[in-house]
Length: 98
Image (cartoon, rainbow, N blue to C red; front, side, top):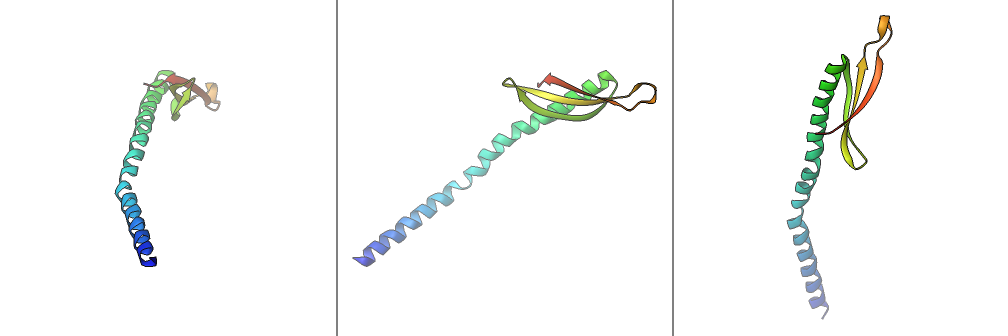
């Protein structure tokens, strides 16, 4: 009787291990799908930031994506040259992503 229980226990453990290993490769694919849209949004925010900086005559300091009010936005930080030799002014501009 004890040998039958030990064989059943070994078979159950082997089956659980096989199921776990067969499902393991699916996990990285799900993570890649979640990470990819963030990279695209950051690239879009950077290009939007370059356009905003060019329009305001400043230098792009930072461009990041964020969510405000449930909508994706780009938070752009531009350094605008100061007047008469003063240090640059920092302007933070929030624009809709896309």
